[in-house]
Each structure stands twice: as C-alpha cells, then as structure tokens.
Image: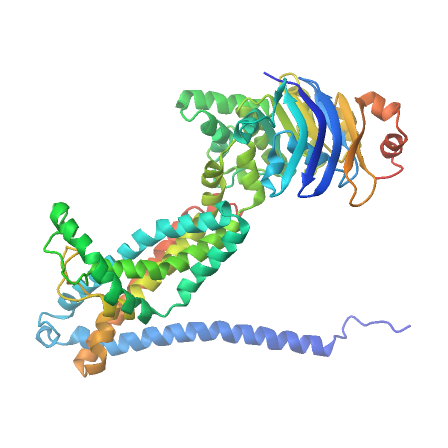
Length: 259
Length: 310
C-alpha cells in the first residue's frame, strides 16, 4: 500500500510571486526521500504541494503535474480532501489534538474516513498504529489521558501514529525532528527506517546528518537570492549527494561551505 | 573606568515601578470594594422585606410568594434569548472566521458590532411598535396548531406583547456579544491544529469540529454566560415589550414579568417597604447572576486537563 510520486514541471505561486520554479522529480515507492537546502529555498512549500496542503494559504496555486501512481493530484474533479487522506503529513511542531485523549488522537483520521468502526477494531487499530510508531509500550496504560501531556518526542510519534492509522500511500514529514531533543530525534529516525518497509516517506530536514542517516535518495534545493524562486538543483542517491555531488552548489552546501 | 556597584540602583526606574504596582493594586482593591459595597447595600436594604409580616408585602403572601414568579419569568426570557441567539451567533462567528471571503468578513463583523451599539430603549421601541405587531399572526398559528405544547397554549395575545417577543428582542441584543467573543476565539485557534485535521483528510466542517470548536469551547461558554448576564439584567427592552402579568406557562399569552423590568416599572413610585421589596428582588437577581457565573467556571474547569493549556 505505497505509491510512487512523479512530479512534472511544477511551478508554485503565492499570488503572483513564483516561490518554486520548474521542479521535476521521481519519488520511489517504499523508500525515504529527503529534501535538503537552506532556509527559504522552497523545500517545505514544495512538500506541501504533494498533498495540496499549500492551498490552506489564500492565493497559493501550482502549475504542472503531480502524479500519484499516474493519477494527477491536480486533475479536474480531484478533491483535496481525498488527496490528503491518501497522503498523510507530519508537521514541524508536534500537534496532537489537545482536547482528545491519546486513543482518540490515533483514531481521529479513521473516524473521518470511514465513519463507523467497532470498539474491537478500534482497539486493535490503536494498538497497531501506536506499535507502528514505537509508542505503544510508553502509553498503553494511559490511552485515555490527553495527548498534550506527553513529552515532545512522544507527541511527535503520536502524530506519526495518527498519520499511519489511516493507512496512507505516502507520508510527508516537514522537519519532524526540529523541535525535538537528540534522544527523541533518534527514536523518530529509527521509526522512519521502519516505516519505509510499508510506506513512501518524504522528509524535509535542515539537518544534513539526518538526511544522510535516514534517506535513500536526497534532493538539494537552493535559491539564487531573496525574491528569486527556489529550484531543485540536484537529485540523486543519498551517498552520491554527500560524497560525489555533480553540482558545485550541492558540494558547497553538504560540505558546510554555506547554508 | 567607573565600576557599577551592585547596590546602587537607578532611582527613577524604581520609583516608576512602585507607582505602577501601587496603581494596579489600588485598581484591584477598588473593584473588590465596589462589589462588596453593592452586595452590602443590597443585603442591608433588603432585610426589611425578608422580616416584614407576609401580609404587608405586595400580593399579601410574603416575599417569596412575590418573588418566585418573576424569577421564573426572568429565567424564561433569558433562556429564550440564549436558545435563539447561541446557534445563530456561533454560526455567524464561524462564517466570519472560517468561511467568508476576507473583505465580506470584516464588513460583516463591523455590522454585528454595530448591533451592540444600539441603545436598549431603541430595541424596546422596535420590539413593542414593530416586532410585536408583525409576529402576532404567528402566535395565532402556534395557538391553533401547537397548543398541545403547554408553552403554546392559546388564546394568543392579540397585541403580540408576550414573553416570547421579549425573548426574541433580547436574543437580538445578546447576539453581538456572543458573536464577537466567539469570533475572536475562533480566530485564535492554532494553525497547527487546523492543519493537523486537514492533513488527515478532514473537510472544512470536520476540521472545525475537530480543532476549532474544542479549542473554543471554554470561550464559547464564557461568551454565552456574558450574553446570559445581559439577558438577565436587561430592563428597558423588556419593560417596553412585555405586557406583564401573572406567571403563565404559555409563552404566547400576555403575562409573566422579569425582575429587572419589575424594579424599573415600580421603583419611581415606591416608598417604604415597597422599596425594600424591590431591592430584595435586585439581590435575588445578583445571586442568580453570581450562581450562573460559578456554574460556568465549574463547567470550564472540569475540562482543564484537556484544554491544551498544559
């Protein structure tokens, strides 16, 4: 249950401002793809166009195609709600629903997509999802407690459990560890490694070591200057990007000469 | 080089600090003193009404026989107002905060705020001269077709000056309070929580149910309670609209009375024990409002653990 994403000639605009220019990229199923690059280079913006979350901002629009196993996400008649139920997202800051218990947080998306679910099925799904997010042992005795009472790293893994509970085709992660301490980061990275057995994972990160640790392929984005659009500079196997990049800007970035 | 001693302090800054903390302390104390003063005044002035022989109180059967029908009348009017105003206000507030295009939203918000600026006597005049007249055919229909409900028992008032009309006028008056407070709360919903819902594949309404309304719940309750406070205490509109009388279950006959209107209508000509009776009625209204606020706080605190404040 994982699908590949092919992006063809994608431009992203905020109003008249071209934020990301002409990106074409092929994201393999059941692999981890990392987006790296300096702040403001459009990698988060581009990530959000992969499940149409950019449309939350008024005036945001795209030109080009994003194909999920050949189906265009921006085709006529495609409902962004359906797109998002198939392509889940984990955000920079952990955002469990504060008014819901841990259990209800995990079930939040499922209750949207297939309204009725029996208690037994729900219990099984909660356990499966939390185990999938490596959180089950830590929270199994307090499922009815609020999700906001957990530590930051636990909250982020709860958000991942919430995302995988709806069994999406793809999971997008927007700097999922930037608000976490190193131990929690390690827990989430281990989890990402396990997730790729079942899901297509796309992760945006500021941390190059993280990209090197978790990803199979890496895309480097860069921006020519303030007010200029972000562009995809190089996309290759992670080992190639870090050891033998073909582009000078990529080499400068990964070797720490700028950014 | 001049070493700055740890013990020397900037004189002016310290003085300003003391003045400011003194001023805020005084303001805080003043509020308590005013509240205490009002309560003390009400209690002292009301004592004669509680201790007087039953036959001397208006109606001749003692204070509590006098007060309870108008307490019920007050609550009925306020409840009608809230039942009508709350869903409309929350709907309007959600429309402004989450559905309307930005330009329309700001215009609409402005109009709603204007509603709050209209003096209550204008609402009263509008209710008495226009609404009551227009709505009386509807009361006739209710009396004919819905009379099996005690609240719609006929014969309907021909003038339309009933507790239901008063409640409707009150609902228009509390609408802007509930709307603007709810709107502010809805707009404060963290983007993170809205996006969390949307990213799970929620529609806009589902997103509102999952993230906006739970976040805004305590705020909505406070807004309703503020509206309730206004509805309970509103005098002029009720005095003008309601053709008062004895307590009746039917909302579409003339009858019923509220505490505030009772005080306003009778106070100018009252003297002696009658004044004490009316002030005692005011004390009861004060206690009701206090109780309502305490219940609201209790409801809010019951869900503190899940409020997201931790």
